[in-house]
Image (cartoon, rainbow, N blue to C red; front, side, top):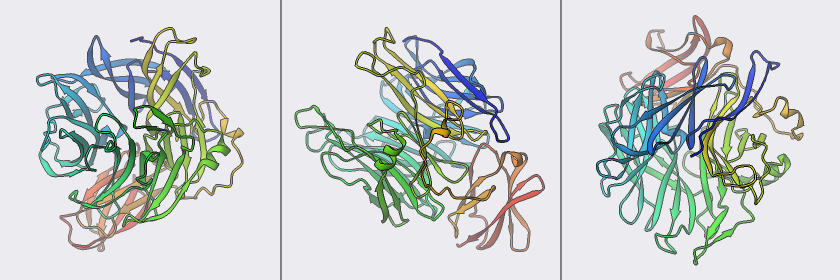
Length: 521
């Protein structure tokens, strides 16, 4: 593998309260899947091979894009290790938990494993837990999401010999199973988990891609179908829908989802770009586009639309949409990554802005084929975004040898790599909701045994953040310190009696926002 660091830095002092840094840098290694922000640097997390020995790689980059160092963390008793999606990394207070897929050294079997890392990501504290499937031996980890102090949710799948089943698994921090649910989609169908979110009612909502091979046997992917599965708080399936349909040949792939403030869920998926025919070659789908739907808590589709007209207006149609992440931004909207860039949309699915990235400024051609694949997105403390992913180039006019390496791309609050790019945006009539400067959302509400508290504060009020819950007489029943870089916490309420409570979001002694909690036992 070719090893190199290549940096383009753009920086300016914005018109707001703080500087917006922008840069692009390669991060060595073959994939960068996620990023964490520290006070004075970013840590880019990826996996790759060093002298045929696979490691987790932490690349540290300063706030202006200068490379600081690389640290390679071996995972014990493995031949290879892989991080599949950004939700494989979870941060809960000072605890860092990462889900990985490894090839077990002693058995040469693919296994889903969980790692605990220290706060600065320099040491794997514990890597002993791995998933033992109820049938079959191989398993792959896609999602690791810590929801409470002693509860971790995993989304993984395992091979049974004829199908690949999806598993939603709740464990404590010691690896003891609290509950486990398995989901299948029929003969010769492979389920891949994409995202897990706490549902508004205390259950979970999980998205999948179903790789359906039923027409041609297990050797050929006939077409993909996306699904949404809603479970109760113990992982039992309540409903399942396929928002993009189940037809053949062109169906759906790469679904992402987020809860919305109105108690529903906004999901986004793409049409398949390719379809495998019965003779094993690929047919191009000229009508591939991006679709959105608002889903009610009972699984009914409230509305559906495609945004091809808006994509054309923004001039960012690159074909072959492959969405990896959808995050809620601090202003109450959503940012969605695709292979080549970002869409920012409001909660009704209208594009606020969209960006296409080619940071190396190489002209794509048959003589030089290359790809950018964005895997992770984080909103940064300066209200910009950090994107992480994989760059792949084949030998051609610009690269003399094959290259596969990770990258980090820091853009500003408008998604711009170059200052002021938003000044050339098309004029569109998208209503951006004006929200309170300090957001405090609580769900489910009414609640039973836990509540999720979703909060956002301004940078000027970021110091000494806390949540305080009192009963109706003003007696404090819970207090917890908050991190500005985090945006939600889950609090267990099973020890509290039924009744009405008040939740305060505070910065020092200043109350920023309040909300009511109703507990029903």
